[in-house]
Image (tube, rainbow, N blue to C red; front, side):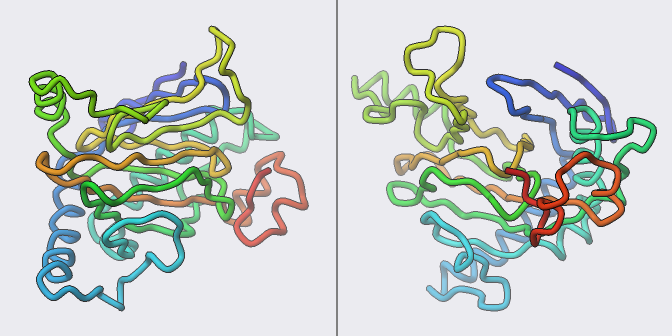
Length: 254
């Protein structure tokens, strides 16, 4: 595992089953600005029952969320764009994607190819197993999450197992899946179960399969955001990514 501090936040990179997964904490002021922006949009959508067509992003996505809105402008305005670019550059420099270590990937080499926020409602919304084949890296951050501890306590009091029928995770969790099936191996995890926490931010290759489980009502909302990342032409020239991959729309590595 490698560790680095960027903007006073430690970045951890682990290889639970390879590919690498990075995790860090977002600054509180960034989380607040993103959440305030999203809440303003979502409160109007819930009140009116109509989606904000100018920001609507869900038509491009799989899964079932109440609302998915474009957040690229607020990322720029809040300063999150630079911070995310720094994390992505560190991620790529810390893994074995570079051809020449003397030419590190810089934040200005990072290109955003999609950014949206999700409002996930209880007892209904989820994301099926999927990946993001139109980017080099995908990321997810958390702005608001249900009260997991209260949920667990309620489960213990009622004797009901809330996560019944959920083989790899618990309600509301992000499950990251390896490319290989390791059901019978004690050395390779079958899946990585990520319990969302406000301010936590994760980054992993875009072709890594993942999914999100639904969660029960009565414990709050799940609000997250996603940023898909690729490289500029100058950035690609610094890597050993095969030429045929560079010629695709977003530099997808398969």
